[in-house]
Image 1 (cartoon, helix red, strand yellow):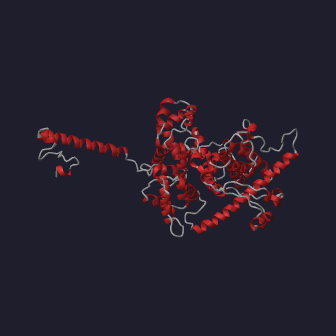
Image 2: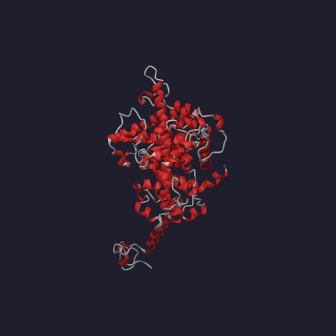
Image 3: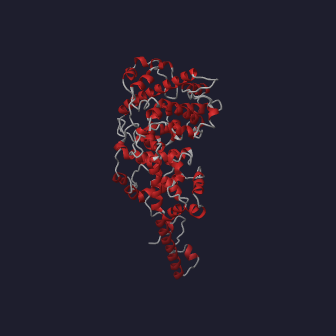
Length: 537
């Protein structure tokens, strides 16, 4: 039935009968039929075009953008009356995977994504976990202070001509030009190779070698006065002399310490001193791109910042603003604790880049530490001395490109770049240098949601029931890295003929990537190649 003038938006009958546009033009019926047929034909062509261009599986990121991030109201609505996430957190993970998280609630959401709190936990259970985690972090910090104090005392005794022979934190500015990757290598290589199996299966958990009795006595020799060295950082206040009255603290002196609480062997104390020096260098070098996203930390007072720096032995920071001093002090505090917690990895340059966004979002030091621990369960493989984890990830990126674009892969083979070493930096610091701060955390949130789904045992079929046909994967980052290379296939094939040229292209990506387009392309790769890639390993 032809529409009438009454239901036409303009009040005009466009298709004949009783006057209107066509009758006004006095178009013969035959020509009218031809015109209508032509319009219909154009509609069919348009339909075919759009169905072709959108023929791939619908991506959860194709319709959502930053403005649709999970809001505080939506976040609150996901909980039951006793404080548990509904349906075991499935809906929560779906929302984060599709939308990311609003800035105002990231500090609440991230501990769930990073495994600090179980997705099925109640509020009461999380409160208990919070108390336990705080105590564990405080124990690590006390050990850090004892080692720092021991090094300072040794330095004073061994001073010769006004210089310290024990490798104290010293003048950071003078060391900046000389203490770089060489320090990292020396710190990492000094760990006993006999204690490592270079072909061992990758583990997400730190090793747990016990300290010897000599190690325990060395670390605990100055424990009695540990309460005299308060450490004041955001959310991590001094113990105010509670050590002697706290049974948990007192018990530390009577039992051997595992590697997750201390350091592997007595010689590792020397490694830790080296790590401390490198950590301080990296902390004062940290950029300030986090400041717009953390106004409370950006407005910290000068007195508070200097007090925090003094508490962790940070020096030579006068050129920094108070907020950056405070940020650097928090980085030092948490990275030192992590070096003791995971002595196999210790500290390596690049880890501060991963921690910086977490510190800027999570105000409590102990909670930021455990978020970092959760993050590093996967990222720690990037910092292994044997580089097994890095080689595995580069191999996956290579296989994705080979399966998706054989022409590009053959071009890489001609340049002897099929190992994809040119994306090494992206793998190590998880796109931290290629994306802006906000883009980085958006990508990480989606990646964490995938990893949390795997930890929670959410199956591929459950993911499909949420209209997200790509299964959760631990390697979403690698699919995103492959997508960033595939987005530049034309330039790589037509213009580049060497590994160095591709490397320069990858390094020039900084600030040029659209994170949501990147996720969209990564989703397409996961949806079409996941089973093939997984079966090859």
